[in-house]
Amino acid sequence: MNKILIAYFSRADENYVDGQLKYLEKGNTQVVAEKIQSLTGGELFKIEAEKSYAKDYTTCVEQAHQDQVANVFPKLKQTLKDISQYDEIYLGYPNYWSTMPMAVFTFLTSMDTSGKLIHPFCTHEGSGFGQSLKDLEKLCPQARITSGLSLYGSKVAQSEKDIEQWVQSKGE
Ligand SMILES: Cc1cc2nc3c(=O)[nH]c(=O)nc-3n(C[C@H](O)[C@H](O)[C@H](O)COP(=O)(O)O)c2cc1C
Image (tube, rainbow, N blue to C red; front, side, top):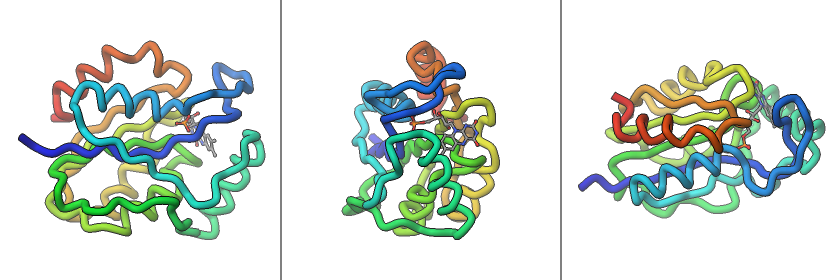
């Protein structure tokens, strides 16, 4: 049986939900990651920058933008010990300014993904994957990237069926 990793970035705290600012106990992408974990029995790994973004939404949006413009690869809080034991990676992230948060760039460049099967999933508020899949292909040229799942962050709680179908299809 394939060994599965579910690596994801997600931020709780203040976010836009259905046009309103709200405090979330758990980030949207984390909700999806945990659902995938319960369906696959894979191992969860949270991608976190050493220095997290602000709790308030507006500052966070600005910080994330600055990191992208300056092409900052932030140091991660924890590193994954051994990628070689996993065959399949579910990779989850929120759409940040049309691509992945820079901490996900750090994560992907810190290890060898050649030969891995990567199933990308993303939460967003309207832009879907944006250009993140192109960026992912560039960062992981030797991996096989299957067709991903993008979900509205504000609708993740009602997206169980979509997640189940996608996991069953293995992104094929
Ligand atoms: C810094 C930042 C940038 C964002 N940029 C976009 C964007 O360009 N397009 C979009 O559709 N949603 C954007 N969003 C909305 C998030 O992708 C969405 O709320 C997501 O579900 C958050 O996931 P999380 O709760 O797991 O962190 C942005 C949110 C933040 C905080």
